[in-house]
Length: 55
Image (cartoon, rainbow, N blue to C red; front, side, top):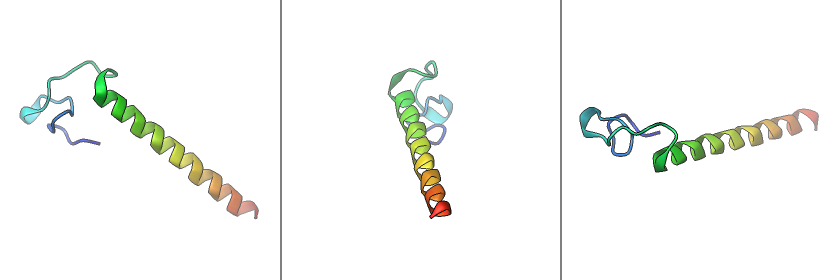
């Protein structure tokens, strides 16, 4: 996750990029991909924990 005010963070505070509507643009796609990757990783970890519990 990018800190507020960093380039591309969507924040106008401290010289950041102009605010755009949430859900559009490369930053939104990047955040969505991060969320998807975290979800897949969590599911894989859960699956491994279930396998270990029953073997």
